[in-house]
Length: 240
Ligand code: BTN
Image (cartoon, rainbow, N blue to C red):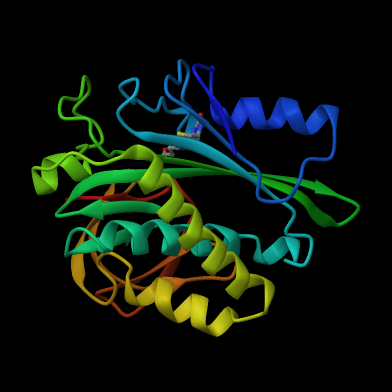
């Protein structure tokens, strides 16, 4: 574990370190002040200095077939979900790998895989988990923290240790080929799984029911006419 007093983004920092040497698997870079935190699809990740977990873990999941790389996202989402669920009920995984509690986002992950020689040569797993922050500058994406949900303050080092233990557990499941267990747990915890709800895809608004996630990580939604459609991130919006 390497704790940085400040950095642009822990994912960027980990990536720069990876370019200089082979890092031990599982090394964690965390920071108190992330100045240019990155979210999915070029979004910014807001985190008040000293209040939350902003960290990146370096993994070498060479055993995961490239076409199944979404399994890494699932394992990470399950770990963060385990952590959050230890403190609050009703936490869900919102596809692809956000953690929501009561329609509010408490955590997001940014997983950046490098592919070389037909395998996933390394994976930088970035996790932003809101712990003690109580005021958020931006309303999007409806942020919340553990402190707001429980009215308590948490020790960040303890939280990070617990989260790393959960990550170790689920990464071990992945390593030992417990794919069915991962898939089932992920779908069981998925927000709006098997529920009719409104969605928007481009101009179209429709009612649909999530029936799962396909092997490459696309969300599968059944429509009222019985047809099923697969969506990549940003192709579909949950109307909450
Ligand atoms: C998202 O929900 O859009 C993903 C957010 C990921 C944020 C984390 S914070 C640590 C790591 N470093 C980054 O720049 N981003 C991730």
